[in-house]
Picture: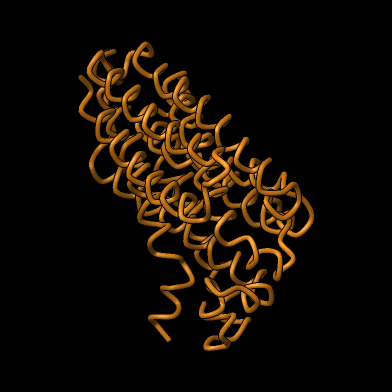
Amino acid sequence: MVRDMVRLTKPRVTAMVVVTMLGGMWVASRFERALGGEVPSIGTLALALLGTALVVGGANALNMYIERDTDRLMARTRERPLAARRLSPEVGLAFGIALSLVSVPLLWFAVNAVTGALGALALLSYVLVYTPLKRKTSLALPIGAVPGAIPPLLGWTAVTGRMDWPGLLLFGVMFLWQIPHFLAIATFRCEDYRRAGMRVLPVEKGDRATRVQIVLYSAVLVMVSAMLSVSGVAGPVYLVAALALGGGFFALGAAGLRPTAGLGWARRLFFGSMIYLVLLFAALMAGF
């Protein structure tokens, strides 16, 4: 039971969120010190990380509660605890609510009000807007990318207590990255989503439109990631890395426009997107 309750939080997703938030914290700390400002204590930053992990865990648990019926129809989700009926819906709902009720006040009062407000926005928009919209329109993806892009901004505001231009650029990078990342999944899992009644782009608009969207968002992602080099948080070495990584990611996405590109391409793009994000944040945190 404990293992399944942990699974309700989607531990791998939560871990990735925490890593991107740490990246935002690291960059913001360097930026704040350069301006002569003070960085919060280790204890405060640790509470910010904990609060963010609880926000994400609560949102994921509530998402599984709402989607437990459609999860049973998809190969990649049918073994989730609520879909497989290993846990009762009431347990999942109570667990998600409990994590949510602890997380937002923790961020608000133990860190700062800006971070708390952003945490509340991420939680509510993911659970109450994105999750139900997935069954109605493919526009749910860019809407859902908003809460998904907030974690590095949470890291930024946890350090600075305000929203600055570099922090918003970090938000932009995460927002734009999520679109090709998820569209790659939706491409090679298209029949799963169709069977579950999810209105993802490959189901609603078709495969070609999806591949064009991947290329367009990847191109804008490269430009926004490069802008971090002139925002005061990274130098010329980062710029070279961002352009090289972005060029490789864009080329991988553009390869999907070839008539011979099959579902194997989408799987490569999915895994490549995660490698790209990790390396990009590593270059950014190096700060050169």
